[in-house]
Figure (cartoon, rainbow, N blue to C red):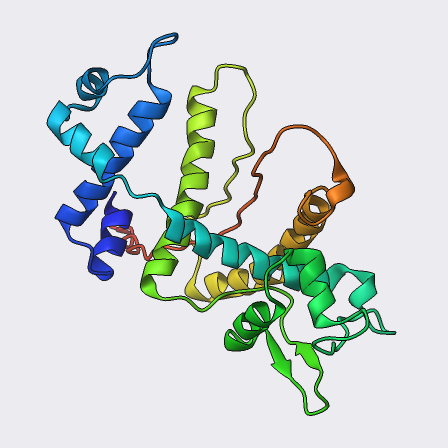
Length: 265
């Protein structure tokens, strides 16, 4: 909670706003996931398990935010990321050296427009191009072609958008922890951490560089494996049901006080 509160205060989110969001989350989860089997969930039961009054619960239900704006933002992020993935990995969009080809916006395939259609559906290619140009992932060349500058899409966002994506990343980690703590079917999700508490500042800087050199290729390998099986990217993948699956890598460090020197007397 201390780490979360630090982020909220840094971004101008006061206590009242946080409690309002928390209240909506309590009501939403209680309504959807904590009902009595075989019975319709009621405001009275939600009040019992959340500690909120029935009046408060009804007010939250009446004012429940749809979340469409957040969903749209995440969808934009995913679409642009898929286009960059295709540009990097699809051999149809590679040059004679196997690198991402420079593409004309429109015309015969391969073109930027055909790339967007393949990896992002019916989204206007101009919208994707504007986004990639804005964040510096791609650039227009003097010959009219478009060149890919980065192998990954890292968007430039405002504080509100960053908090939305932060919330989704943290939610994934917490859901994994919940599964591993309370799972009843014996299956656990992958959750590992490497941690040492007496590294020098120089070693921390060196490890961060080491992580970047190893972590990005590993994530690209994971990305390629899942893209081959994702039915938006590969409609022929087949299979039943629909799952959202992901893996996250993150670096963290904390400043610790040095232990006082041991007495030699």
